Image 1 (cartoon, rainbow, N blue to C red):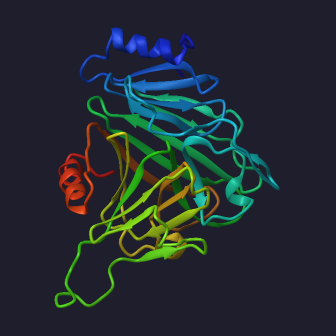
Image 2 (image 1 turned 180 degrees about the vertical axis):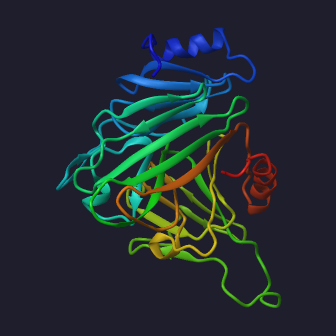
Amino acid sequence: MIRGAVALSFGAVAFLVAGKPSARGEVRVEKVAYFGQPNCYRLTNGVVEAIVTTDVGPRVIRYGLVGGRNLFAEMPDDVVSTELGDWKPMGGHRLWHAPEAKPRTYSPDNEPVKFEAVGADAIRLTQKVEPATGIEKEMLVRMDAEGTGVTVTHKLTNRGLWPVDLAPWALTIVAGGGVTILPQEPFRSHDDYLLPARPMVLWHYTDLTDPRWTLGKRYIRLRTDEKLNYAQKIGIQNKQGWAAYLLDKVLFVKRFPFVEGRAYPDEGCNTETFTKGSFMEVETLGPMHRLAPGESALHVEKWYLFPNVDIGTTEATLDAAITPLLSLATPAP
């Protein structure tokens, strides 16, 4: 545990970093007050910062460049009522277990979580076992010493008395006003290849004529629109191993593995995106597991931020902007 840390307002923390930047190759962890909660912890290397909550969660509530805006949404007042109690979206990044079902998936995460510093550059957050499901959720958040990289290891453990079928599901509620970018599998002519290669799953409420969608040869895009307060969602089988969200010319990239030959939830999806009004989620999923009591399933994401990204107005300009950046985003382990 980190001892002797002093709770600071976010403004005080930003001043501290600006005045005394982390040394090159150094990650600092400090206790801060943020999001109306007194017991948050902040990791920073002087370039990027991530803030986790310990009064609720596990949750990463902020990810952004130092001195820049939060790429994650902050939703302190929203509530979803279920048979298990009130679940609060809150915003930020969370861990669920798929496939989605109510009330099981919406088990409340409104209580304090166990916090542990892991070395000098990581924080482990462990939730109490969910009473109704017997599942224990854990996130290990590790920051690179340089650059903007953050590795999030998601872990689900069956603490119940019988086997459970599930998949780890990593969901990020991003700040509204931007566009999600998903890769298509590489285009190949019918003359070269005959078998299908781009599995896409639609929900009952998905409408591909909705103006928020842009479906191209190389990319699928979904933007938020606060005037269109009804839901849109798709899922894809994504072997390219990345998804992105662009907001105010800052590109948030997730890298994650695809395990060939394994079954994935939601008719084979490992990447999904959902919007409603200004709400947007960028979601990734691990393969399905049958967990015997005491067994765990892991799913890893690697995050990056790239500033000053202009994707232009066409798929060609998008491709020219994003391709060199993806080469700098090392895949998740």
